[in-house]
Image (cartoon, rainbow, N blue to C red; front, top):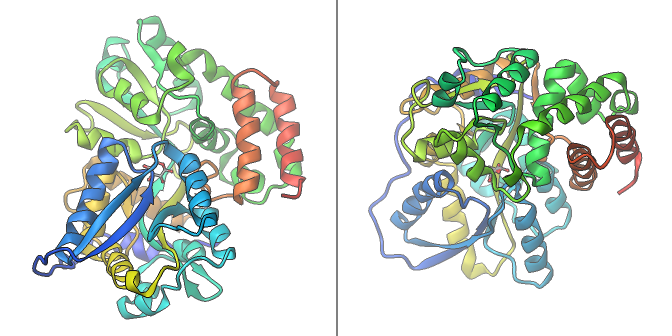
Length: 421
Ligand code: BGC
């Protein structure tokens, strides 16, 4: 998928005038929004949007579906749409947007997009998902990336580690050192999407960006069932002894809390973790470290969160329009993403107020886009259609949990890619 984030991201330093502001009005309309932003940082970011809406006389009615990665949320959303009771809007990303646009249930946002000139303000890489058959069907709110490693400064120091790992071998050696010092080495949860998030980074680190593209974006069976993929799965297996007993049912933000509280050394998760560090007022370098998954420096596996709007009665459309406009306003994009740990999805938003990790995220995206190493994240639905993603997640999780061997996993991945869904 072609990506043109460069003009957008390279101009992020440019300050933009503040908000979408208007005098506060008594709320008359309501928007019901289904999402999975339930962790502290996520809820904090959402508050920026809710406050902005209230200023415009629209009350936010929350439909939060806990469970990161959105698997639960998608099930609820499908049930509601099938029952003829869709919410006003829902959080979606990547190929899920494409999938829903095929159902014919999404509102066409093109008139709003024209008025606010989204075509010139949203990077091309995001438009590839947000525009369907020439019509805008999603309003992107932020850009996340998954190939990150988060580390506790305290745990590293107590384990005698003076710098974060830069290579895979250093990472494995550091995990062993942390474990030996009595801490949990790798904070993680066993939900398939969390394991897949680690997998994004391991594929990229093991095979590099070309291999990532060939195996996961192009689904080339020769890359999927290959010695490199075998090595990827062997590396996944090598991580397994570093997670603790509580791994199976842990949410991603509980794992982040283990790093924040100095109970675990590392977490391999996307920069939504930054939202949690922000929420707890932790400071980069002093309390925690953010580096790219060792061996993936220079490449970025990305996705963008967006809101889609469902076809509802005419009486609801005014509030839906106000919500779409708010999402795409510079003030909301700046405030939301600064708290959330993501990069703005609009061109030209000021970096002011983003901390060192937030600024690194923005700079890395620009640099990866410029060098052709900006890649859709498998774990967050930006690489393959939802059904294929589900089949891949299943193989990746079963291998991580020791149910199948690395060689079997590589074979099954290639088979899943070939199957018709
Ligand atoms: C979403 C993020 C969210 C994370 C954890 C990801 O799929 O894109 O916005 O913070 O899941 O819930």
